[in-house]
Amino acid sequence: MTQSLRQLIAGNWKMHGTTAFASDLAGSLADKASAAGNNGVDMLLCPPSPLIAAVRGAIGESGIALGGQDCHAAEQGAHTGDISATMLADAGCSYVIVGHSERRADHAEDDAVVKAKAAAAQASNLVPVICIGETLAEREAGRAVEVVTGQLRGSVPEGASASNIVIAYEPVWAIGTGRVPTLADIAEVHDAVRAALADIAGDAEKVRILYGGSVKPENAAEILAVGNVNGALVGGASLKADDFWGIAEAAA
Image (cartoon, helix red, strand yellow):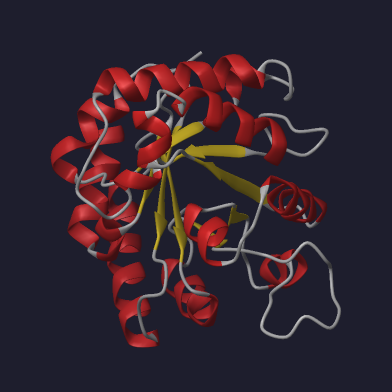
């Protein structure tokens, strides 16, 4: 099952924005979403944690979902600066990104850490968006599928199913660089991820697999038309209402 799944367009704002920026951007998207009605696409905004309240207020009843960018594996404790999945849920989130390559690189998070975070998210009734992706060196060595499916198997918690996980394939070398894999390369990895999910998740054919890495309005339609691509995890383009909405329209 591929394009028959409802597409999810998720915006990862990373470390950008102020309260005023968040209210304006989220409000603009909420207005567009409310005017469009049910266009067959799910939308998700993942702002930095200090901006979650502002985004929650701005999206209102528009149908746009709210998510965090990371969570700790523990429910609470002496973890200065960290945020638990319980806190995100209490703040109105329904999703959380875990295992993004920037977390894996900047904070030395391995698959086991990502798996524990994903399990914590599920325990708090959040859907983890589990990120996987190869480096340029790994792709050039012909190991992209091996690396990505290995991360998948190591990062998805027990009891995963289509209702409690989303997978996001983001080739590390394409994030924020303007470089995009060929459509054939994207299809190869997404097909491999779909096949690997059959062994580790219930209703594997219904698990949404997002593509991320320099997605923009100009290339969104062709990427989203690739088999087993069920949405996009958008970085830079999610910081501009017209660009992000253009990607959502391409998914409709």
